[in-house]
Image (cartoon, rainbow, N blue to C red; front, top):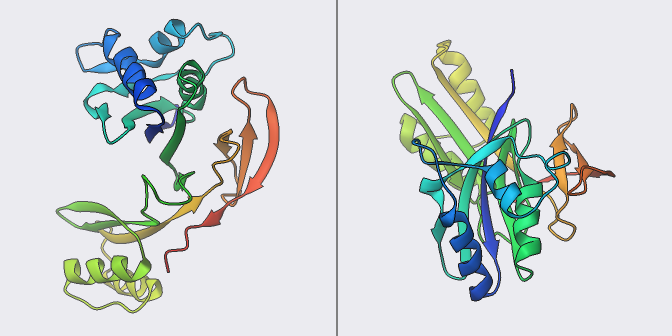
Length: 219
């Protein structure tokens, strides 16, 4: 079975290009679930469907205009839909894209934290409820985890020790650090067996080497 990935995108650029890209996305037909097929976008932008990854859709409820930016989120099989986003940016030349993707780990190319400033996410389950929140620093993450559980934690190891002591499968806490990759090249990537390495691909799928990712400096 395919893995499905959720990715948030922000396109930033000139107001005219933002408005044109928004008009494009909102002009295409959607299904009864409010899903906009990525294939429909690829066809509209005259992409080569044999070489363009478009196995998924945009959740139209996430499409929104901000301050000179356009936001939307996608669900896709196997990998995020960077080729489709590239195609939009090629059509409207001033646009650049930023993303926050979860591929077993969190990744962003927003190195300055302009749109996606979070550098860690806490996934907390206490039996009857599961919460997930993003934080700028580990101190904030530990403070929130402490408030949520009624305990004080000085480190991630303290959190692990506490939840291990509960010995309850429905009670756990995972602190995900966000991997920050550079935005300069904005190349497509796929997760590899080694989470510290990412395979880079050009928009047409040509291998373009590997990079080593670093955790966000949120400590």
